Length: 120
Image 1 (cartoon, rainbow, N blue to C red):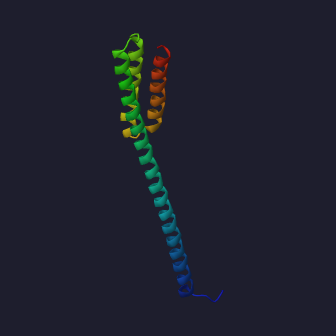
Image 2 (image 1 turned 45 degrees about the vertical axis):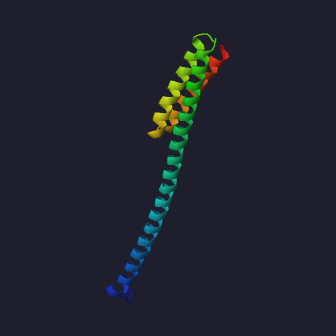
Image 3 (image 1 turned 90 degrees about the horizontal axis):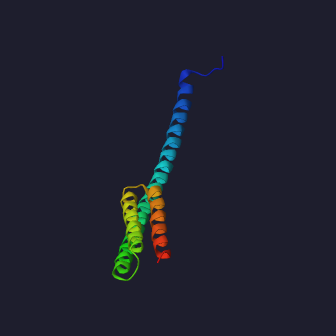
């Protein structure tokens, strides 16, 4: 026998439980800070996708109207309008949190507008 009684071992177990609670609480705090940082990044990505999409949509529509009023062939304003429509869709998706798809649609819409500009 070691000479220890049950009352001697109980405080040690209680201290271990308190240490485990403190460690778990510290880990929860770190997770909360990381998730708060992630939420801020996600919010910025949504705003960036929506803002960029709105800007490219308005630029595409303005270019389509200017080219349609001028002497450009019909496919040129149509390409600008198509690119603007794709960017408008990207704006909606970006605002809803689908930022990866919105980025790709912004690229496709800008490429459509660039091809329309090259055919002028």
